[in-house]
Amino acid sequence: MRCPYCGDDANRVVDSRLGRDEAEIRRRRECLECGRRFTTRERVEDVLPKLVKRDERREDFDRRKLLASIERACAKRPVSIDALERLADRIEKRLQETGQTEVASEQMGEWVLEDLTSVDLLSAARFASVFRSFESAEDYVAFFASARPHRYDAEAGFEGFAADASPTPLVTVQDGSGSEARRRPS
Ligand SMILES: [Zn+2]
Image (cartoon, rainbow, N blue to C red):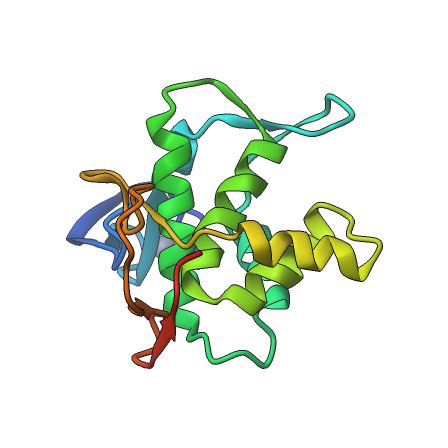
C-alpha cells in the first residue's frame, strides 16, 4: 500500500476498526518515510460473486451503483439514507451467502425488489417499473396485488409474513426511517 503523499510503500498500521456494516475494515496507517497518516479500507466485495447481465457480460458488484438505483426509486419518499445503506448491506450479504462465483444480475434485482417492498411499497413499485419494464397501469395493479413485504435475514431466513392463512390484522412495517406504516398484508 503506497503512501498517497510520498509514494513510499513502507507503513505501519496504527489503528484498525470495523466499518458500520461490519463488512469493511478501516486501517489507519502511518507512512514510515514521511510520517503522514492515511486510511485504507478493505471490503468483502473482493469475494462477492460476479454479476451476469442479460447479455452474458460479467460485472463486478458495485455497491454505489446499487445504492444509486435504489435511491432513484426512493426519491422523495420517506426513506432514510441509512435505510438504503442497510438494504444494500443485506443485498451484499445475500450475494456473499450464495457461495457462488456468479449470480444473475436479474436475481439480484429480484432480491432488491423483494427487500424494498418491505421498506417502502411505493418505492418498490417504482423500482419494479424500471426493473420489469412496466408498460401499463395494469402492470402496477398486478404488482400491488402480489407484493408481499418480507425481508431476508441471514440468521432467520425470510422473516415477517409467513404464508399462513390465519387472518392477520394490520401489521406494523418498519421503513427504517423511524416512521411506521400500517399495512394490511394481502
Ligand atoms: Zn509518505
